[in-house]
Length: 111
Image (cartoon, rainbow, N blue to C red):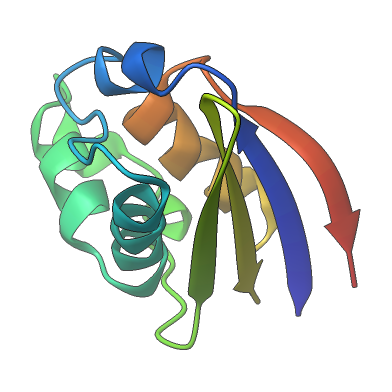
């Protein structure tokens, strides 16, 4: 299990990241959205359905961790999220790109 420290320096940019972007206005809300994206398949399935060839999407990208936990805190104007999951970093990064585009930073990874 790994713990990822994620910084969202400009939450408004993350919320404007596209069709699957965060909707929450708070750090706790974004933490809940990321936790849902890691623990369930809803976000992945919506994204997959939007692809030109959904059946050609690697099903391994749809892996979930029902035990994933994410906490959020506001620091100045940005948000800090701490995600603990058994999912590999590749899956976490994919979900974060869907939710926040490029408006996030991976600060640290701990095992």
